[in-house]
Length: 139
Image (tube, rainbow, N blue to C red; front, side, top):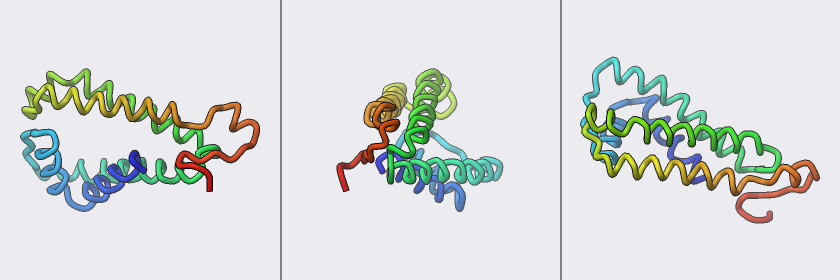
């Protein structure tokens, strides 16, 4: 749920009102964000995708063995976000005044989250054997 809850909340907020998301990112990233009508619209569109990503991760956590591929795809999305964040550090600092150290921290957090998902997902051999495996212990 650590992977699922933030995108669901941010997605709902973005899909309904971009002001909250802009304020959140201004606070959490120390970014200077100007919410134009165009940016507000884009946040609403992207909020739907973010909410869907969180919902898929929550669904995958209900039976990780059955949904191993969703966990893998979620980890890939987080890896791509981490690499994008790390590769755009200078640009984010220049455009939005995001402190470089904070952007590196966020990128490394995403990278560690992705690696944790890959490490915690059920092994392919376990999935093929048909055993029920749960990320949060046995039921």
